[in-house]
Length: 97
Picture 1 (cartoon, helix red, strand yellow):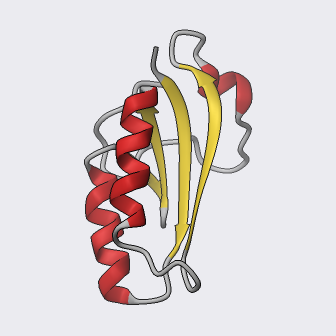
Picture 2 (cartoon, rainbow, N blue to C red):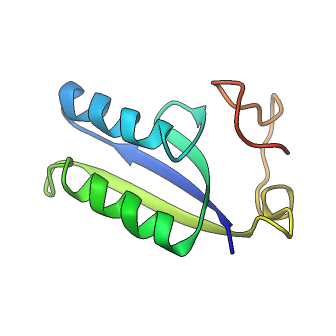
């Protein structure tokens, strides 16, 4: 089962930030600066966490994972709220809202 996972990161070094960004592009949709909305299986999330663990500096960087709920239940609209412009992916591909 796939679920929506909001991944946000704060990376202290530009080189590491670029590496994290490239990894994230393979797993989700870029919705805000350093924020991706992903549709992940449990195995996808394990793989993503391991890839990121190998890149980040464990005392300087932080990656947050927020599980929003099932893709089938349209969890994005039910579990998230925003003001201002609509939630539109920055790379204009990937998820359907």
